[in-house]
Image 1 (tube, one colour):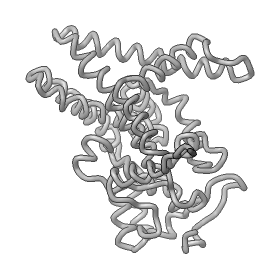
Image 2 (cartoon, rainbow, N blue to C red; image 1 turned 120 degrees about the vertical axis):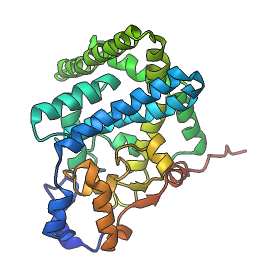
Image 3 (cartoon, rainbow, N blue to C red; image 1 turned 30 degrees about the horizontal axis):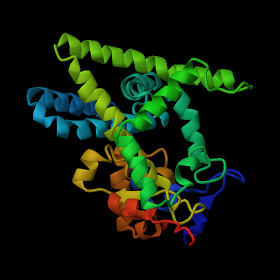
Image 4 (cartoon, rainbow, N blue to C red; image 1 turned 180 degrees about the vertical axis):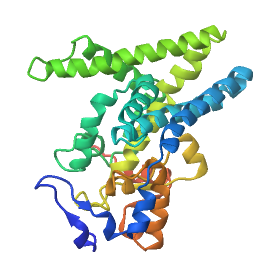
Length: 330
């Protein structure tokens, strides 16, 4: 456990432990890093779509650039998920209507997400992080796994199998299939519809827009292909890096991981400061665009060695795939 025991408390017997901000920051420091900016929050949504648009334009202009555009766009599609995640915390704009519109229709819906369904789910994850009640525990509990197992998962991601399975299940649930009868059956079907219908609407608008420009094929090659391949893989890497094989499920400084990312990793794997996940769980209302500054302040105070911080995604992946293969007995 962390030596900063005085900064810990429990919301209830099952909830994950928390750290009080002023145990680590001065009031002036906290006021600075917790300051929200609508320009930064909403601006990042515009930035995300601008990067996607420029990557599409470059690949349309020179089709040889498709090989580069696909991972760039796929990473920015993860960026849209990151921005929906921020909206779930109310962090895109102080006005709830603007926050939810940008977080749902311009971030979550185009990639098949529903802010309304995601918000209570995600806040439960924060309340019970790495505890048995954590709804995301299924994503981290199986790790470490073998290298062969991880290789198979990544192949499924990059060949579109994961995407097809997710979309098939989403639309089947929206139609009432694959849902067992019970008290929550109607709610689950409604939640699936709240994601599936906006997904069809926003993707239909994007297809229409590209078709009117004379590049209908770009919707399939430069939007759906990245979503079905690279986005699936980097989403998996994000999930692994955030909570898999963390050293202490009961320590608020060590039940989530910050991964120090290089410039290339930020471009192709970890957009919009998503790699600062330990800081995000320590102080979940910090704006995402202040997480790096919070990390720098904590590092200057000598706090980061007590946190779960790793250098680069490759090291995290190796740790997550460190389980030895079982050799059959002769």
